[in-house]
Length: 419
Image (tube, rainbow, N blue to C red):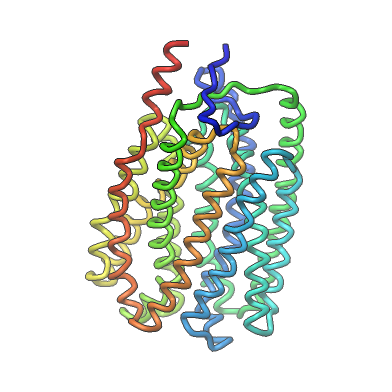
């Protein structure tokens, strides 16, 4: 039985059906979800090496904090500007083999990073890695939704935990391999990119097969009968929450090692281990937001994740090294649970536009991270690194605006019960 589609004048494209039955749940393809999550792990592990070797780059090229922020800005903007465009294009013309192609850009950027002779070449390497990310994320998020069997929050969380786990491994591997052997050892990580290309070739074959099967069929979708003005308002609120989340994360991912070295006199390797522990907490937290949102509603996960972290961020600038480590773990666990819930919530607001919505939110998240890194780098240069953490501590209070998000789950349950 098909559910009537209220298009709220957004003209959805053919979409993945919203499955609600037990049989649909049984069709969740955990093999594909595992493969795409593993590829996400390798992709984001490679990308996180840029952040992890900032102290080495700062020393080798005599960079200031503003130039460090510019590297992140270059990487994040190439990803953020291209991702929505890739998503919009592939909504209309799916490109299964774009996944290994995107990873090939990342491979080239990684090799260039290892041998770059100057700062402009470093920026080019960061741009190539960002371009690879812009191709990888929208299409891999679509694959996760296709393989979800209707358990969209779970699928996005499994996909996201792979990326966050990979991001957490970058600093640890940098401490073990790159710091002792120098920047040239980055080239060894090209083997990880090659492995990801092999895995993604298999995923692309499955993706192509699924696309052929679904051609000519229009999948039933459940759409909430919201006026366009409320959809626009909800998307704007989600954008502000992404701004809050990723501006704050930029302060930790880009400058946490410098903060620990400056304030507590930590060694470079010790600071990178602390960064790994924080990023691992981010990875662990990202596993819970999606499935909990499937059960209790995504709005409540978003509310608890963004606003709930505020007491800990406000306390962070005023504690010693031990409690800094403890608080950053708590912050990572809570704050990271929001993204999967935000992404699936947005996909349900604008059904049939999985690629565009995924690209928009991944791209906006990367863009906010890049802009945040650049802005906070200049703030650190002018006011000191400790001032950055006192300033950013207030950002999670923006979670209060979550109260204005419409509750999508209640009308869906009512509509389904009437079918």
